[in-house]
Amino acid sequence: MKVIICGAGQVGWQIARHLSGERNDVTVVDNNADLVRRATDTLDVQGIAGFASYPDVLDRAGARDADMIIAATHSDEVNMVTCQVAHSVFSVQRKIARLRGQSYLDAIYSDLYRREHLPIDVVISPEREVAEAALQRLAAPAAFDTENFLEGKAQLLGITIDEDCPVINTPLRQLTDLFSTLKALVVAVRREGALFVPSAGDQLFPGDDAYVFTDSVDLTRTLEIFGKTQAKPERVVIIGAGNVGLGVARRLEAQTERVRVKIIETNRECAENAADMLERTIVLHGDGLTSGLLAEAGIENADAVLAVTDDDKTNLLVSVRSKEMGCKMAITLVNDQTLAPLMGPLDIDAYINPRATTVSSILRHIRLGRVRGVYSIGDAEAELIEAEVLGTSPIAGQRIKDIDFPESSIVAGILQGNKLIKPVGETRINEGDMIALFAMTDDVPEVERLLQVSIDFF
Image 1: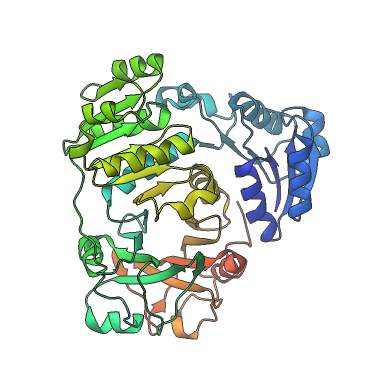
Image 2: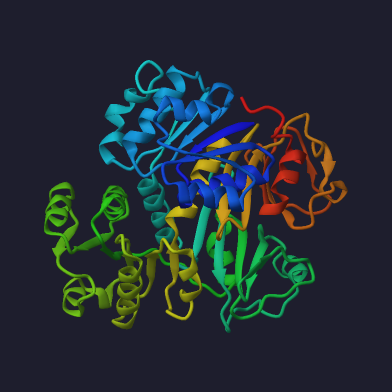
């Protein structure tokens, strides 16, 4: 597949890294020659320095025979024009654009993206994706990471293993014996910074981060087995009334379960705008780092603080101060992935990385064949892929123990009809099943081959 990626920033580079690693023909375009050079020096891609919306630049990038264009520059307007030029001049069949302006995303204007207007096939909103990730963290406060799979019947939970965890020093194979009716499986473990797929004989130790794939019905029980209690927050303080904070507050207001929300925003105009748009949420104008303002917001009685300003250091410091003042849980937005190791020492319960969230969202729309979902783990270290099993797939009709899956991959769950199956060696995978597979990034191409998802894109 031939793909042009417009924008060589963090998101564009990560997408290029994924696609080039899967033997696709990738060309990166950016008006910053240094970013283009970084991409071509570190990845197996071609690079063009220039403005992505210019027809001659796209022509030099190979748009005449490209299968897809991903417009992920920092400008919404450049991304939109790029897709228009790719469609009108070069007839590129698949066009994905990252758009941040909320007015562009309003449902009442959705006709804008029809082929006869602005022909964009998929619109990605980083702010909306991050807001959705924040809501999922709030829904499972005991987990540092969470994502829904298999039509909402399963969830991936990131759980930090504490000293009092009931299953520490227990071989994973024994968990099945101890909890025979539990539909949960440890698919990955991060230990001392290294992520790996555990074997049946591996044990969990304090300080490990375990990724557990579980039946949504067993969510509370799974958390209890791993030493966590589940209680949905009733009082939430949001730091930052930008698009993310405002989006979360609006969604919380719309929930049937009443949640008391307060927002602290340092910019007066932004605070006034939030106050006008929200009905039940209390908006406070001031610096969220100020102890007095946090106390006024009732941080000592809050179930969760959500720090989502555009400054990583502010988010970290507000989270630390909030926890010190008595807040039960802190969720932090962090753009710099290198800050992730600080979350444990700083006692921050969960963090959201916008880059990883956006990359996961884009990958969901560019995978080949019958892939329904892709969730990127860590700094693009691994993926959990959800796909429909095709009749042409080598795994169709086979038992799991007879399939030559890559060593660093594992079948996390199978949806057969409306029934979620916890996979074991004897489980037979049938055509039409929905399957969730965890794989380290290097093994993703082989997993896709087994799923027969790289044969035909459209």
